[in-house]
Amino acid sequence: MVPRELKYSESHEWVKQEGAMVIIGITDYAQEELGDVVFVELPKVSRQLKQQESFGVAESVKAVSDLFSPVTGKVMAINETLAQQPELVNKEPYAGGWMIKVELSDNGEIANLMSAEEYEKFIQEGPK
Amino acid sequence: MKQTKLYSWHRQHHARLIEFGGWLMPVQYSSISEEYWAVRKNAGLFDICHMGEITVTGDQAEEFLQYVMTNDISSLAPGECLYSVMCYDHGGVVDDLIIYKIGQHNYLLVVNAANTEKDYQHLTGQKSNYVATVDNISGRTSFISLQGPDARNILEKLGGPEITKLDYLHFARGLLAGVPVTVSRTGYTGELGYEIFYFAATETEQDTEKIWQQLINRGAFPCGLGARDILRLEMKYPLYGHDIDQTTNPLEAGLGWAVKLKKIDFVGKTFLAQVKSAGLSRKLVGLEMESRQVPRQGFPIFDQNGQSIGIVTSGTFSPALAKSIALGYVPSDQAVVGVALSVEIRGEKYPATVVKTPFVPSQVRD
Image 1: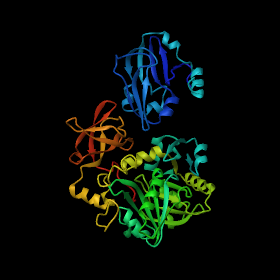
Image 2 (image 1 turned 180 degrees about the vertical axis):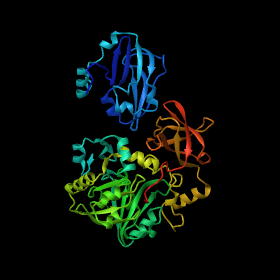
Image 3 (image 1 turned 180 degrees about the horizontal axis):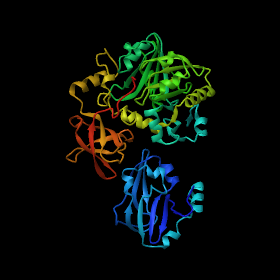
Image 4 (image 1 turned 30 degrees about the vertical axis):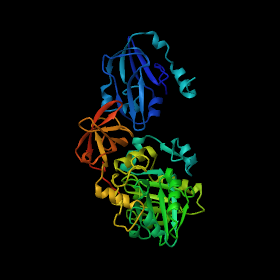
C-alpha cells in the first residue's frame, strides 16, 4: 500500500524527488486518520520553508491537522485543484492529492527521511 | 466505558470508536460523507443504545411531568411523543428530550446519554409533591435509528403496518424481523425516520444484532456519530453541551415553540416569562461561511465593526450546501437573516452570513 519510490516523514508526509524538486503530500495512513478532508490551506508560491515547519493545514469534518514540510526549500507550486476538490487528498493521496512542489535547499535532508519499508514499520509500531 | 449490545458488530466491521457520554460509540464505519449521503439519499442506520431512558409512572405522572417540563404534556395521547426541554428554576437547560406517552399513567423519557444520571437526580429531586415513580432503565434497552427517504420501504420488508404506517411523533409496538419491538417516527437527522427499541426484559444481544443486520441486509447503511452530528446541525437541532446547557435558556436557543408559558406552573416559568417580556438579549443563529474553513465550537464571532459579539457553539462542513456552517449565539439585533458577520478561525476572520434555518429542508413529515 505504501509506494516504494517515495520517502516519508514521521509526521506522515510523503516526498517524491524529481531532480532538484520534490513533490509533497500526505500519506494514505494520514488521510485515513484525518477522515473526509473538506479544506486544505496551502502556502503562497515562493515562500521559504524550513524542514519541519508548518506549511498549511488539512481540515476534515473531525479535526484540523498541521502539514509539516519534510524538507527545507522554496515553494515553487501548489496544487490549486485542492481548493475546489479537497477530497482528492482522501481519494488519491499519492497522485491528485499532492500538495506542494518545493525546490530543495539541502539534498542531504532526503536521505534522513524514511524509506517505504521503514515507514510501513513506523505506522505499525508507532514512534520509537 | 460502557459498550452497547452492538459493540462486537462494530468491532467486526472496523468502526472507528470514540468515547461519547460515557459510552464507546462508532464515529464512522466507512467515511463520514458517504454515511451522511446514505441518510440524505437512501437510508442510514445508527446505534443509539447510548441514549438514556427514564420511566415516569404513577397516578400523578402527567401532573409531575407537566411541572418539570416546559412543553405541554397534557396534549399527548397514548402512542404519541413530544419534544421538550427540562429547565432549572434559573431558566438554564437541564436537558432536552423526547417524552413518550405509553399509557394513562406511564411515560418514557429518552434523554442525552451524558445527562442520564443528572436528569434522574433532577427528576427525583422535583417530585416530592407528586404521586409518581421515576426509574432509570438505561442500559436495559436497545435503541437503533433508521433514517432516510428509504426508511419506510426498508421497514416494510421486515414489519407490519402497525409500525410502518406511523405518523410523525407517533409510536407503536409490533414485530420486526420476528422480534417484539417498539417503533417511533422520530429521529435526529431531518429525514423520514424511525427509532426502534425494546422494553422486553428478555431482550438479548442476539436480538439487537439480528434486527441491525436484517435492516442492513435490506439496504440500510451503517452510520456513526460523525454523520449524525452533521445531519442534526444542518437541521439546527441543538446538541446538549454545545448549543444548549445550564447557562443557556430555551428561548434564546430558538426552542420557544417547546416552552408553553400558558401552563399554570412549571420549573423555570417565572424566569422564562421575565426573559420573554424583557426581550431576548441574544439568540442562537445559523451562520453560513463563504470559505471552506470549518468554524468550530468556541471560535469567536465578530460584527462588521470588528467587535467580538458571540461564540460558535457547533460547526461543520455541510455536504448538502458544500459550505461550512455553524450555530452560535449573537446579540438579538444581529440575529437577523442576511446580517454579515465574521468568524475567527486560526487567527483570521472569515465572512459569515446569518441564514434561515434549518440549513436544509426538513423531510420528517414525508
